[in-house]
Image (tube, rainbow, N blue to C red; front, side, top):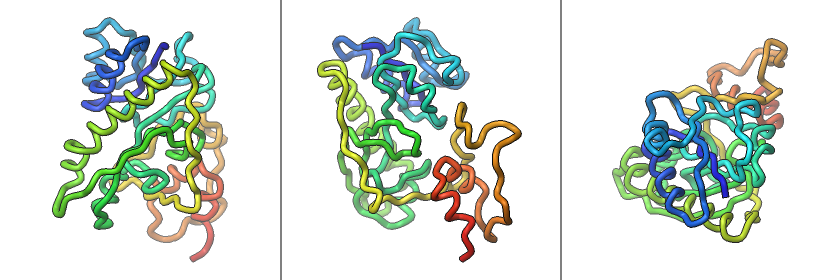
Length: 240
């Protein structure tokens, strides 16, 4: 089975090493930023690297896209180029804490349990079917950085390897749909929204803009993240 890994940093590099050890699995391409650890790891292993993953740059012959700390939205047109689409890891017990700062929001909200989920990439940010999930405890006083480094990142490497091994052994994997009645979503705290190539709703000079002023204090990044979800986007424009 041929894998493309789209990711970065320590997590992306560790997922790269873990997947290359799986029997019958070949990492045939990597998408990572310049100067990144994942990119360097791929170069040392002779694996081709691309800068931005779109339908145009997607190589042929890929069975599964694996998002490993990727901050770019992988569009439907790109996912359809892979036989099994794409999967990703999110550091929360989905459908709770969708969004780019799930770990920090769990800490801010004083929670004592969180976890990690491997899910199928879809047109809803962090909203695809869940393929594997496991919880971890949050110790009193634990920082978001420590929680990610010591618990959630290693958990994610293991869960992604587990799911990819199942794909390689048994073919397409059926997940469990997320319960939208339980879903929560929080905006990015201090980072820009995910880059979304190929997404017609928000690309190009003809993209739609709010027809009326946004509510006072609403962060523009929240709007950019929400534009991928029509219902959420419209709800932001409703008067309080």
